[in-house]
Each structure stands twice: as structure tokens, then as C-alpha cells.
Amino acid sequence: MGFIQADKLTYTYEGNLVPAVKEVSLSFKKGSYTAIIGHNGSGKSTLAKLLCGIFTPTGGKVLIDGMDTADEDNMASIREKCGMVFQNPDNQIVSSVVEEDVAFAPENLGVEPAQIRKAVDDALAAVGMTEYALHSTYKLSGGQKQRIAIAGILAMNPQCIVFDEATAMLDPAGRREISDTMRKLNQRGITVITVTHHMNEAAMADRIVVMNKGEVAMDGTPREIFARVDELRKLSLAVPQVTELLYDLGLPAALHAKEAADVIEEEIKKKCL
Ligand code: ADP
Image (tube, rainbow, N blue to C red; front, top):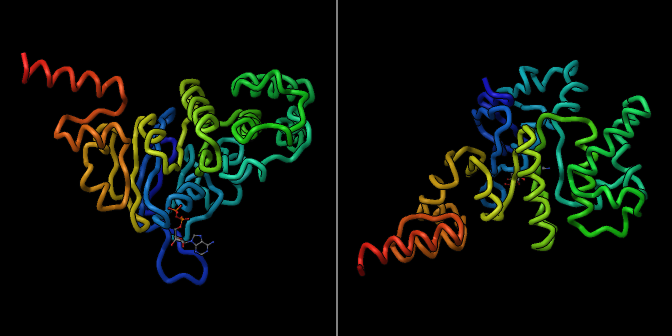
């Protein structure tokens, strides 16, 4: 069984006739790194909130490390195990000083001060923000604010972090900071699930789940998913530019510029030498 296990997961918003997420069954292994993509309104954000227990399903169920998210008694443990980073960095900052902001959640849980000090220092180091510990939160860039939000979650020592369009409001430099942070956290063994509409970001994950009308339309590695250019286009989704270029040239799929250069070199060798 996966670390997060969704079984026929369904969610219908109050007053809506059509479910936003419909009978979705997915399993996420411990330490995996998954991107969820899909056009607007396909159910990505609702699914993300269900997967980390913020929403309770209206049908089916989600188990996080074996704990049913619908069971109130599991709420506190689930909050500690699985954190969520949202789109707007400003909404997630609760304190005017960086290290106080990061300490907020463990302080609220009544963790020992010495333990909090260590958790905050470790969390700031993990997101590369140690030197900003005593800075004002309001002077930070969007990317830095998101890294502080991530550090606040890390201070709780979670096993899983779900990012809901966490890079959507950031400039390209901020997006890269957060993508790099996601990869590093995953390398430390944290299970990462990220909702994104940036295909280059999705290509960095080990697995991509494509949502359409509340259901899973595709599920595979970035290489498998981005080879299905026509199907993605039908779902109004782009593929990474470099993948699209090679596809339009009738060449095998590549996810990165370096890989594309190798594919083109191979083709030239085959055809011209
Ligand atoms: P995505 O993240 O892919 O854009 P969402 O999960 O936000 O999709 O939305 C899925 C569906 O649920 C959409 O049809 C949307 O209109 C509906 N929806 C989302 N949030 C709400 C809400 N708070 N109340 C009612 N309907 C909602």
C-alpha cells in the first residue's frame, strides 16, 4: 500500500451537481515525487486538498500512512505528517520576523524551546534561508516567502508536502528556487506532490498525473506522458517547449535541452553520415 492511498475518491462542493473529483484511485509511494497537471477546473486543487487531508471526501476515502482522513481522531497526526504549501506566499506568512514565522507551528503545538530552536535552524538550512533568520518577512521576494512557508512546514518534520500551484505567483527565478527546493526535499525522503501548470516543472517530477473533468486522464513518467503530445493538446495542455519542437520535427521525445541536442545529433549521424 502507498504512503498516500486514494480509493474511489470523490468530492462534490456544496450546491454543485457535478463532482470536482470523481472516483479517483491513486497510490503514492513513500519518497515519491509526483506532479499533477490538467487544465483549469479539472480538479487538481481539490484533489491536492483531499490528498493531504484538508478536505474530507464526500465519497471514497484517503489513507495517509494508513490513517483515514475522514476520522477526526487522526486529524492531529495527519497535520504533522503531511503539510501543504499554497499559491499566495503573502497569505502564508504569520509573523514579521523570519525565524518566528518558521517557529509558529511547533510553538503552537507546545514543543520544547530547545527542540524548536533546532527544528527552525534545520528547516531554514534545508530551504537555503539561514542567513535571513532575523530578517523581516515582508521584505522578502515571493520565492523567499514561499521558502519560508516551506520551512514552517519542515519545522514540523513532515513526511509529505503537497504544493498547490506554489510557483504560480512567482517570477521565473522564484519558480526555479521552489522547484530546486522540492527536488532537495524529495532527495531527503519527503514525499512530494505538486500541482502545477508549468510543464518544465512537471518534467522534473518522477511521475505525472493528468487530470481531466475530475478524473485521472493519464498517469506515467514525464517521458511517457510528454510523448503523448496529441492527447495532451486535445486536453488543452502544452508539453515542454523542447519536447514540442522535437515532436513537430518528427523526432523522438526529449525532456531537456541537453537531451534534445543528443537526439538531434543521433538523427544527424543516422541520416547524414
Ligand atoms: P483546478 O485546480 O484544476 O483548476 P479545482 O479543483 O479548483 O480545479 O476545481 C474543480 C471544479 O470544482 C471546478 O469546476 C470548480 O468550478 C469547482 N470548484 C472549485 N472550488 C469550488 C468552490 N469553492 N465552490 C464550488 N465549486 C468549486
